[in-house]
Length: 135
Image (cartoon, rainbow, N blue to C red; front, side, top):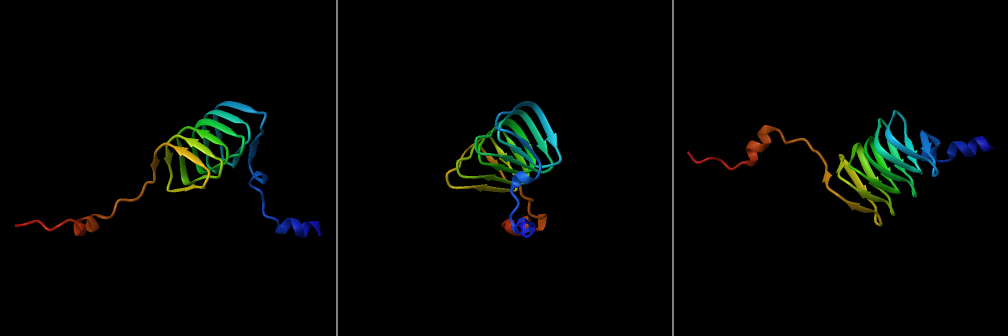
């Protein structure tokens, strides 16, 4: 019975990856190829191939590069996500965001610039949009 209940339960993000606990402080460069959950404090730089989670009470003062960045705590620094940056209610982010997608929930605070890169339209579409020249 417990096995069936476990199979139907939704997995908590903390079930995967590494956790920096609430009483831990890390200074320097953190790199990894799995999810990272920060409940404590990290100062410096973070580079991940997977998702960074900043839990409520977690503090990050770092430049961050990750596939996804999910903030429920405080993040101070420029961030780059290959997919999405998500700010949950109560989150605070101070810094510039570069990502194709951005979600800011009601109650989150953000101060900085956002760059959401897109592909330039093909040259023929630009030509169609331009008015014809007088001859």
